[in-house]
Length: 559
Image (cartoon, rainbow, N blue to C red; front, side, top):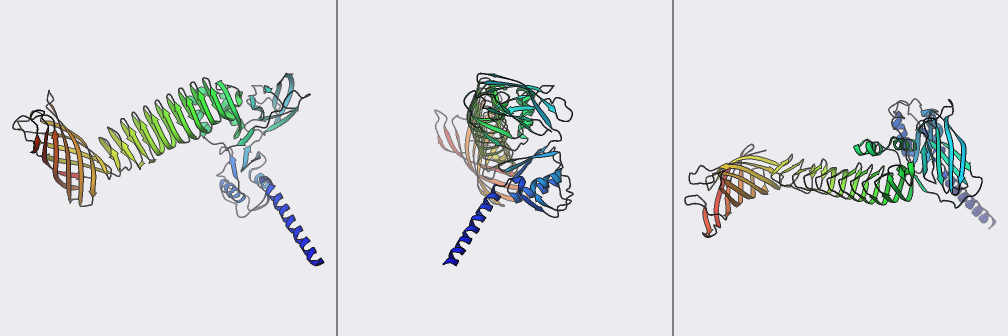
């Protein structure tokens, strides 16, 4: 019994020791983790970093302009901590930060020193006056971001490195952080002499890898006009650092309840009297003129004139003039003039035009729709341009697509569809030149014709119609067409004829086909005596309504 207890105790200690070790290993930071790399000499730096991150379950985040990913690694093998490995790969001019799921690499050959020169405490407001200096040269550092994360306030240093920062409702200690591109981050803990009021809770701080979407937003015409240089510098200095806040109110970009820090804050509710520039919205954003967001928008965004989102939009976006999403959109976009995004999953509705590189849903516009990749359905008042269309294209004039089985329009230019020119004649003696274009199922019909019969008061004709392919074999096909013919003498005679045609065709050789078949024709205008109308089935002399059988034959060149 004694041995059994002792063995049981030993086993328990082993299990507990293992659990403690596992807990410590799990809590170990990314930079403290042990890495083992072999045979990496001569490989591109970017590949080695990717291999290291995939092996250890995180992502590296860095500016591609400051990390030469194409350079070749000179280290043959390494065993040790990740921090030592990065120092050996990149050298001493880089620093590393950890955020959940990320190791951030920053090029920082310089260092700063922060000096608080004066402070003024008034009620629940603290005003700090100070300066930021280059640690080696002693010169003032211009355009450095000075901010307090918990208070969501920030400013930029002037040309001499000086700054003034106003902090509302500060805690007993203020954590002052300074960021500047190419400088190491500097943090100063400032202790207040007394407790001046209530504490503020920690804001929900998070990190999101910096990408080119923010720069792309700033390069737009609206971005260049409305986003100040100071706000652009702030974004560069703070990189991927963001915070969350329940609300913000602004008059214009920069004149906000979050001040200069507004571009780094995601709000649940955002009200911009004229316009605002924030990191994003996870709730509702309203503006009298415009909304501009560096990252994502969730749920609802409404502006009197325009909305611009630097990354993705998920929800409903409404603007009097235009909506622009530089990333992907999911939900509904409604604009008086124009909607634009990369990938759309949902509905785009505009008065003039919609644009998306890829469309999984529906575009409806008064003039033009455009999608270059996979495309759902498009309905426009004039022109549709699509890629691989899975739905329909409906336009009174022109449909263009790489592939579309169901285009409905006067002219359909479908790269992988059907196109043909024909010379045909019918029971009236009208000779026509016909262009048919469309997809594998639906196609459009347009033609011009002339009837040499001397009894015809309207010898010139134009046909427009819609056809459907019922059978489409290599050597035989069967089509049905609904055609509206307008006949005129270009003076005062205008007559209409509506026809339903069944047209079987046989392949003669190559691209050449012969076709011919019956038609049922209807007109509500009486013809003068002697005009050929086919085989009349029913005629009402009082109102001119006439049903007649006809026949159409022709020779078609199809490609």
